Image (cartoon, rainbow, N blue to C red):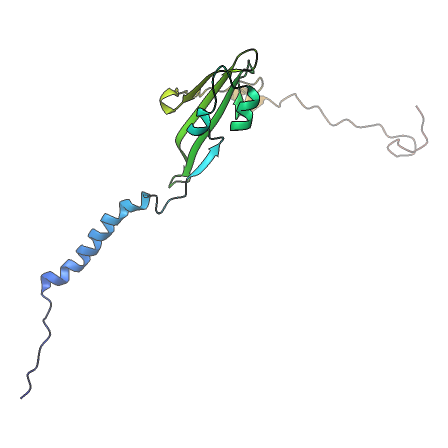
Length: 181
């Protein structure tokens, strides 16, 4: 006597739940596309002045040569006064639309006195930044703005008839024909 075991048959509710579970999994996984696992690695840009290095700079004692030996050359100097040095650094990454993103931007300002001795070392972060709005105007250039009438009739009278040279006695153009003037 053999007993046959019939496999359980899938109920209609169980068959329909398969696509629903797949759709739910896709919806839950979609936000993971913006995670750093799938993104570009972060890159350090500029001249990063670490906190340990800044502790070695003593205002009133350290000189420009000491700062250069410790931090290297500055990223920028003051426009009107060479007594301010700026060490600018940021961490960047590529955003999903290939636009660069900036994280953790930091500026270290080192001010020197007239004897090239450090006066102040201060750090500026994102909270110290100011928003600068760009002006959408363009500088007008003379001759580029033309009215409709100038565009339609602007070339009338600008060009005359093509200059022709009288033909010489030999029937030539006068060039190399032996006619002197």
